[in-house]
Amino acid sequence: MTTDTLDATDTVAAPARRRLKVPRLLGSATDITLILILIVAVFAVLDFSSFFTAQNFTQILINAALLLVMAVGATFVLITGGVDLSVGSVLVFSGVIAGEVMQWLGGEGWGVSIAGIAAALLAGTAWGCVNGLVITKLRVPPLIATLGSYGAAQGLAQIITNGNDLKDVPSELVDTIGFGRVFGIPILVIIALVVALIGGLVLWATRYGRRTYAVGSNAEAARRSGINVDRHLLKVYAVAGMLAGLAGILSFAKFGTTTLAGHATDNLNVIAAVVIGGTSLFGGVGTMIGTVVGTLIPATLANGLVIVGLNSFWRDFAVGVVLVAAVYLDQLRRRSRSSR
Image 1 (spheres, rainbow, N blue to C red):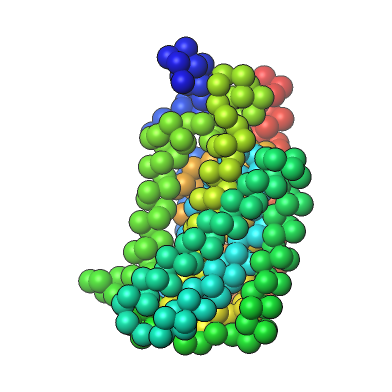
Image 2 (tube, rainbow, N blue to C red):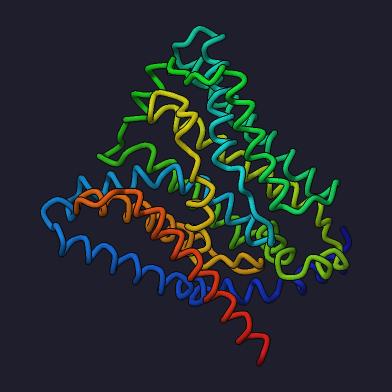
């Protein structure tokens, strides 16, 4: 790529860079952080002794870990102006592939566990590539392409297992990733935070991140500046699939089973977490800090509702309402900017 092309690319991405100045990066998550603090305060008032404890906060982080891993990939996807509804099914499919590989290799030992991890990552990446190719080459809208993948991945997982959960997880995987801790911090939480940190650095400080913003801000302008938009989108969906695959093996280690029927609402919760965190469904806007905070809201709601004696299903209702409100506010902001 020539210097002129790189300069043009940076010009297209300039609005994104302005959004990523440190004060703006921190400020963009301020409102949603205040909302999270308010939710915590409400549940603390309702039942302080049960809710406001280190053990309970650790449990919230554990419950949010899988969601956060998938939300990191979804942040990149939504910033490009796309959407991925398949993450929950890809998680299940990747866990099934990992389970089958580990059973075939004998079911125990670190070698078997590493093979299972690699299989889950490859399965997730492959499905993400399928999504990317359908979107970029067949020109199927992301909503339809990933909705199709949602059903197809879940169906294949059911076919492979004959509808029965796989439960033969290597003890090494369960004892370390599933329940292990380092200095009292669950390894699941550490992995999720590391993924979020890497995702944030890539989004904020690399050309890949700038191009992601550029594609979401104006795909045609990005294309004219020399960015291979289709190739970039393929990479973005592949990364989202890979992270769903990682979530698949983490789920397998955490629950000790493939939980075939346990991820039906993951796509809603992931998209809600990212949008609540400030990423626009219309592309070009978003931060990883906002996604981290946004991910904690569904987990905190579910935890707090159970503690105060309400059915956790109210969590899905609340998240749905907040998601609609967040999109509406995003539309108002867009209209306000366009009228200036």
